[in-house]
Image (tube, rainbow, N blue to C red; front, side, top):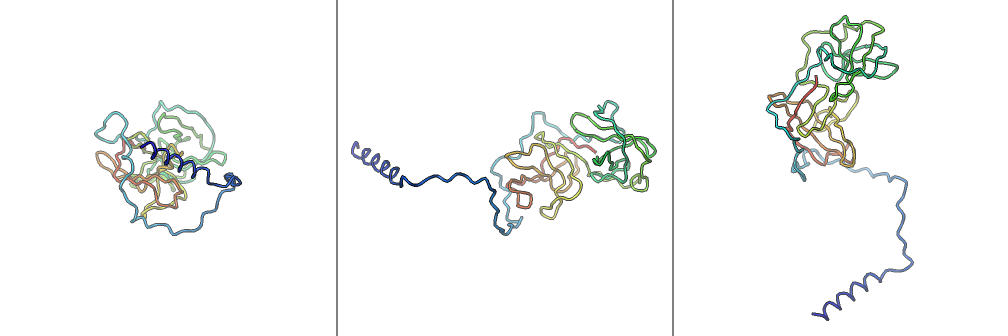
Length: 238
């Protein structure tokens, strides 16, 4: 047995020392490499088998999704800013009669809410968890022909939602991407090394709402590394 151990150790030392002393370890390049164009795999080929469990619910089970409505903004909302601006069309983040797309000094706020079609100000939520908002005093009347139209409300159109694991996601207006023929609608908090979590499509409305969620690491033009269907939603904002 002792002879075998000695032979093994000798073999390891021989391999370790066998390289040329003139060989150097190349320093990592600071210039990003340009990936070669490769065909994007078909979404059908993506396995829904998960390398890790679906997002773990935070403590506190719930039996139904809480729907938080901003039809009449909560009087306890903290206005972190007050400014002058205008609204020129209906909101792009949800379909609701009193929801608007507004601007202050070139910055767009969407959604913004009014109490009535003749209000002189609107309230635009900033952080949907702690009820902070900007109050915009309007420099011109609301564009009623572009927004305040009864009967067009979309029940499943919400501007923000919170998943069962506490992750919060907000609707992205403007141009975005598609996966499995559905728009990537909600981008979630917490972008980092684990990638970006995105809700695809709109929620399914039930006692407990559900959404389809994927995790993208190598860019949204590539397939997600994980994809979950029917993920429970703890609360929504509309």
